[in-house]
Image 1 (cartoon, rainbow, N blue to C red):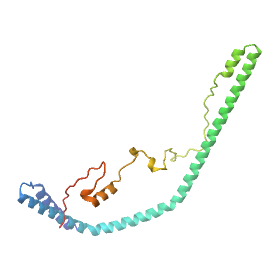
Image 2 (cartoon, helix red, strand yellow; image 1 turned 180 degrees about the vertical axis):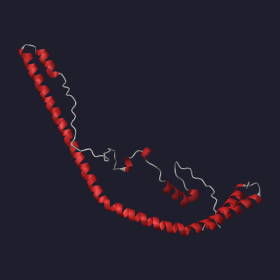
Image 3 (cartoon, rainbow, N blue to C red; image 1 turned 60 degrees about the vertical axis):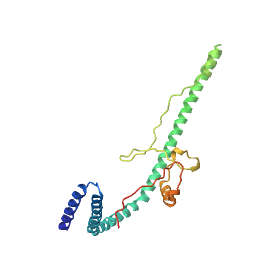
Image 4 (cartoon, rainbow, N blue to C red; image 1 turned 90 degrees about the horizontal axis):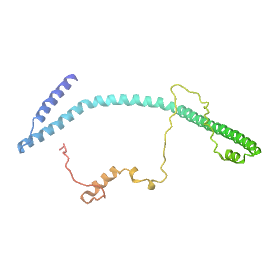
Length: 214
């Protein structure tokens, strides 16, 4: 095998030198370049044919390993998905309870402050200070911020990330800047219609592609 690889390397290097030395200036050098293109094609076929059996064998072994790996990983997915769903549900429930508790405490503080001000206003009214009493009643109440910690334990190696998701409800309402052209559909249409193809906003032109074949 090493001898064959060495032969291919020598043939490749010789052909590469010949190719890079060509400067097409007339029909003769053009024909020489064409022959070298065909020679490259033939050498590529020879290289591919030489490595094909090894690639096939290696691919089969790789594929078998990947399938076994995939099978083992897939068997764990139901457990992982179930636990993830349960943990997220628990965290969301704890977050809901935390916010409810914060609101309960806030409302309690608000009630206490309202009762305190009402008591002060009543005392002021009894003292004949009606305007001051009204001012206290009308004054905006600012309750200090409340923070309640949730009861979810912290686990090393696990954390939660919040991210925004989306779901398309009506694609006809999506603004143009969020759309992309269907290039596969455009290419298929142009190939089918040829010179008669017309698409607003699309420049259609013909180009040449060098085909290395018989």
